[in-house]
Image (cartoon, rainbow, N blue to C red):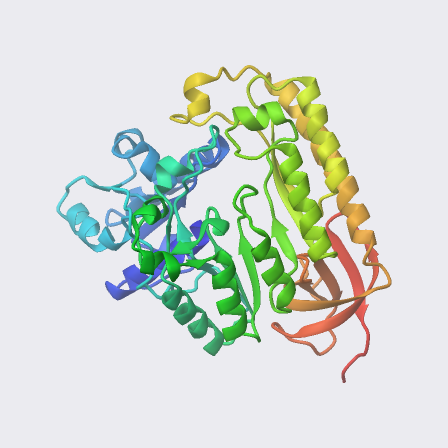
Length: 445
């Protein structure tokens, strides 16, 4: 989401006369787009600011701004805590950047962190700055109404609201005309996409009967994108188990250009911890959804988010997580030790009572198990043919391309005479826990 937001910011500033530079030392405006999901992310930002100190001493005209969730969470405090910072701008206030920069020029405190119930930036054509000309992010929703007790996002990004589907199709059409091959539809919770004419999702019940009858849900949007752009591969992230409906899975199965991969966070395998997290689904409901996905899309890649060390987590709870992983056998996952976030329900009501040492041991066990499953899942591709979209050179060798399968597996293979953006058939010969290694079926010379 921050990658996509940064591209919106770049577009707003470009319209105000700014130009992008690849080197921080050449800039007279530095903006850090921040995350608050874990404490480590905020500490990374503070360390980054220290690196800018010497640069600001050398360049008296340099302005430094903090954007995003950390800005929204700390607001004016950031100007006092980080003297190097000149302006603080929340995720819904980027259109105000030109005015705020003018305030900075007049030595005023420049802060705008007002959350919006309607802003989706659907009138902005993002400047693509974090891309390879092959893949692009397209935001479809903003905010989150799911009040998970560990999560700061509802407080930093506000209420769920969805973007006009016409503006989404317009943006994808622009990408298509520029030769992009793959887009990822983004939202804190894409399954909650609901367009009924604008406004927060929570107000849908107040909509007219006409609006309700003509409302577009996520499966409708997926179908619109898939049918309008059959030559573009489509991904989406992130899904919430309680909101994912069967019609989304059926739509994925219906269209070949929708990739067979679902990122489906669970956070814990323990019903007791899930309830304490305010995850509005049970372990069994989650497993039934996994079963349904694999019935409809047998080879679907499934990944997860997992938090270990949540307050009061017992060894039994931890074993429940490991047993759920054994039952699902995810392709890959994002695994973290619990990090208390100020202002959340968990921070206000639950004592962070799991020691760092115990969190680390449990995290290592989860990571080790996931590596085992990733290797097992990758092995199923050996001696099979995979369709791969080339999106970069291999990190380990300039003689190899790297690309991804529909299931989101990374594949490396010899370059031959292929180019970025080509879709090629690769025979998989071997694998690691993270990568499929192969060669193409027929070399074109």
